[in-house]
Image (tube, rainbow, N blue to C red; front, side, top):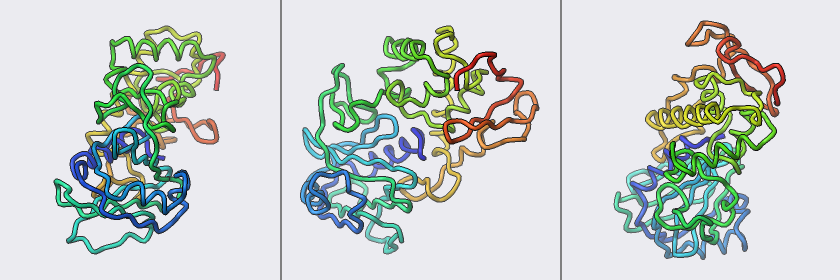
Length: 307
């Protein structure tokens, strides 16, 4: 599933290419892709038609484009969702096109924004915006102190200025993690504690921080938790520079190009390969119906951990 760097790459592309455009018309080719919208496909199209895309915002893995003061087009990419910007010189239609939003007045000259989704786990919806409890902007890319109602329970992410390193917001995240009785990787994956970190970047961050995924959060020093969070921010910022992590053609930016951070991964997906730091073969463990990749030497397994 796309994680924060992949979604931020898409958000940045939308901000540059379609913000300011007006939705001239909407075609829904698969009703299931707007299943979360109250009223179905017809209502979805009616609520977008004629609206202007005012911004491109993101919190964690959730992306939204405000279309008026109290509503937004919310996109969740799921396993394979893509938002692709088209122009009049591009006649090709993707075989997994689910929704097409025809645009006018885009500053880039774009004529359409397509939602493509091969596995159909993603969705679009026009939803209400609600005030943020702290009065701060809802997410990266917007100054408005509002967030889509379905995203209100999602915590801020490590690229959000409100939780920047050294701020009270970051210290609140550290404290929240230490209050939990769980393993550090589970805490990093909990989107109500800190959002945007998925399996790939959790493994990479913990390798950088020299912490085993089963370290019990309630026994960790605050400095160790900060080190894990700092490492997660660092690895995600590096991934952003390279357009995110793409293992196949499903993860692309708004122009259809894949990211290449997968070439820089230290442990994720590298079972049996040498640790870049010490040369020990990388280990894979079953974890939450997925996998956890660690270096057995750099990341010592705790005697009493929590998986």
